[in-house]
Image 1: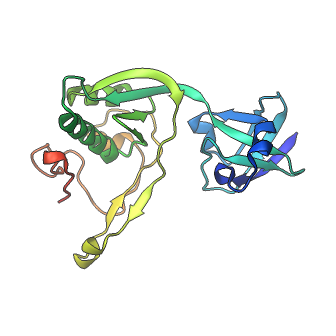
Image 2: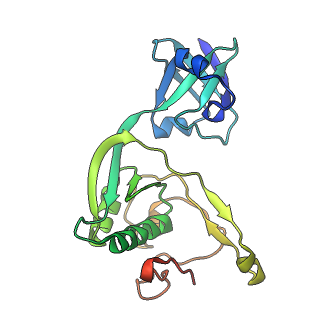
Length: 215
């Protein structure tokens, strides 16, 4: 079995000719989050991946075998949910609707692929119904899923107020209904206390005018 133990993000520094000759390894999002797994290359060769923990493979990354051979990582097509704004909305209204949907998903710690005019996430019937209730269009599709990495940021303005702004995402799990509220559907931790079940008129961001204003 060929052992792959080194990752070169997006094949940086490698000649295009080398990459064209390299076999590919198609992986879904769940597998690309793992640090150790077995798989088969495009040439049907059996490989074992052994990477340092804490890294996520992205389409375009290159893995290096112990004998120096290269393997291109490809984000495989998989079942996803695509969220978009109704076609009847003007661009500003559409952006507002998607921003509102992204806020509610982020409040539930859902990992998202943020794309032009749409949100892409792992299928979840409960969240799909919630998004429809917000006036968004939800459909199932098959395409690569590449959620954005977690981002932790502190701005100068936040620091002067003694407050950190944290934007975090964690891997989604199958939702279950509990009396504690929608956030309890997904195991997670908090960097600072925040509410999950407040109505839109209180404790929610101001999404008016195409802006996201946090309180």
